[in-house]
Image (tube, rainbow, N blue to C red; front, side, top):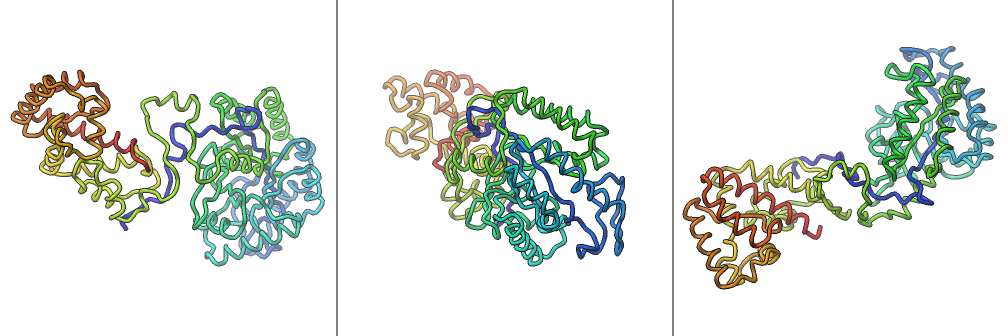
Length: 490
C-alpha cells in the first residue's frame, strides 16, 4: 500500500451538520473543571521529579529527585480554596469534571461535593503526568488502573475521558480499554465527530486550549481577568452568531479558582445568562444528544444556511457515507470503482491510488483533487489519449447505443439523445470539422449546458488555436470527472 496520510484535515467540511440542540438552542456550552491537585508529579506520588506544568511560577522546571515546596502549595491552593470558590459559583450548573483518579482519591470531600451538585465526573487519567514517552503496555496499564480507581472513588465508571498530556497511542488505548461515550483528547473542531478505532467508531468531543484558564500559566496568555473575560465573550458571541456550535470553557481549580479570575468567570456567566438559546450541558449529555441526532453510520443531512456555508458558496461538495474509505481500498478495488471517471483511462485512477491519500480524499472534491493531479502529471500524449477516448457528442456511437453508461446519461441530460435529423446533421458536421482542425473530439461538460449552449460553444471553440483548445478540453475532462464523482454512489 502506498503512503496513506492518517490525519483528517477535512472534518465536517464547509457545511457542518445541524446539531439540533435541544429546544432550538443555538449553542451548547460545556463547562469543564479539571481536578488535578494531588495527582501531579511529586516524589510523594512515586514520580522522579516535581511538577512544572500550569502554575503561577514562570519558567518552572522539574526538580529531579526533589520536592518543590512552592509548586506543591500552588496545587494545594486549588484543592483547598479554588475548588470551593468555583463550586459555590457553579453548583447550580451542569459541569463536567475531568478528574485525575489519584487526585480524586486524595480529595473525598471534594468528590462528595461534585456528586452532590450533580456534576459529571469524567476521567482525566491515573496521574497528571506526561504520557508521550510511555511504552504502550505501560500506558495501557495506567489507563486500566485509572478506570478501576475512578470506579472505586466515584461509584461509577466514567463516561468520558481526557488525558491532556497524551501520547500518539492514548486515544486508541482509552477507546479499547474503556466503554466510553466520548473521548476529548482533541482540539480539532467546534462539533463532535467520530474516529474509527479498530472495529468501532469512537465519538470525539473536542476540548479547548484557547477558551481555557491555562493561558494564565503560559507566556502567550492573559495578563488579567478582563482579557480572559473578553476572549470568552468574543468566542461565545461568534459561535452564537454562527449557530449550531459547541463551546467549551476549560477551568482549573488553582487557576480560575483565584479571586481575580473567578470574578471574570462570574461576569462571563452573567453574559451567557443574558442570552436565550444556550444549552448548558455536561459532556456526557452532549455526547448522548449527538448519538441520538447523528447516530453512527448515518450520512449527515444537509445543514441549513449558515455563515460558514454562505461564506464559501463556490464549494459544491456532497456528503458521503462512512464505511470503507477511498484511501483504504486496495488498488484493484480502487481502480474498479474509480477507473471510469476519466473516460476509458484507468491509468489515471491507478496513479492516483499510488499517491499519498488520506481521509480528506474520501469525498468528491478530495478524490477529484487526487485524480486530476494524476491526469495533469501525465505526458501530453497520455492526456491526448484521454481526450481521444471521449466519444463525439451525438455521434455514431450514441446512435448505436455504444456509449459508456456515464456518457449516455450525460448526453441525455442535455437532450442530445432527442435530436432532430437536422440537429444531428449539424452536430455531425461540427464534430468532423473540430476533429479535423484539432485532432481530438469536442469535449464539454454537458451537465453544465443545454443543447443550444453546446451548439454555440462548438462553433466558438472550433476557431481556437489547437494549444488553447487542448487546454480547454483538458479542463472540461476534469469538470466531467468532478460531476461523475458527485453522481457516484459512494
